[in-house]
Length: 392
Image 1 (spheres, rainbow, N blue to C red):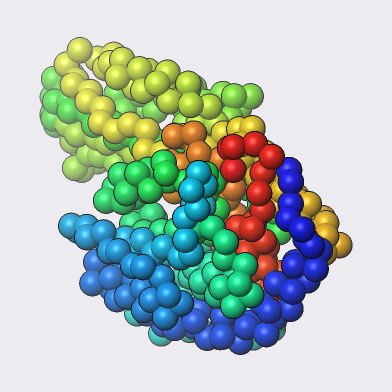
Image 2 (spheres, rainbow, N blue to C red):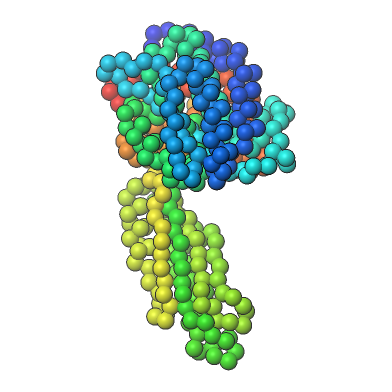
């Protein structure tokens, strides 16, 4: 990877600038966390998105809102100027959370023990604040020499059904994608598993368990067979897991159950396994011919595989970290993000560039303050990097 002239000096300046702006970064994170934004509450998500749009406009960004029905709107903000022959870079994030409105009553915002606490603070409102601060740093230092697109969505936590098309369309015109999701430890993420969701439903024949047992067709027993079958499709060596997470059925203990169902989570590390596992689910049949088995679902997010383009991005980031005496590591994870979509269409994607902390989706969700400035400077530094090849 090729850097820029005065790389060490520039990075030190960015870190110093990020430290000066840390209080403002925390204040913006605070505002975003206080504006609770669960995925299922469009009005709440849109209100939080409005705060981010307001800040983007204050920084001189050209803001476009992508309206969505039933989900929070997406915000596309563009900064800097596009030079001829040079594609923009994309900062990608989301503002919806898994926490319902009112969570702040029992899980309040706090700055305590050198951490920031609150619903959505790590996943990923701090990452959004970091990205906006990185853009501000570059602009004030007159280092914003390429176009940067900040795309924030409002439905990532529920699979991005309303924003996927926008994500893929915007990413397709960019040379690289920096995903503002939390770090894994302190590492950037170069690979993520893809995700799939299936629902199995069985209809049997109800009967009195004591009087007419033989006349019944037990839907729960048939479901148990199906669960055992699909669970056997797990292949840990390939990074393929099939997990039945929820199941139910029946109406009373003395009734042969006529209905049963199960929800299945699938994770794939390789794109080819998506089609393979889909065919297997489509071919699932009932053993008891008196039962009817139906399957619905599919792959929601393709895997983010460790491509050459993503490795080039990571190597550039590792060099920047080394300039500051830091050792940056890479990681893979079984969880998915919107970076899965951008990677799958061939755009080099580096994930986990947001805050460092712990407890995403848990009540101890928190961000480590000590890493905010350096990680914000790293986002800014990656915008400045120029590659030796046209891939970035």
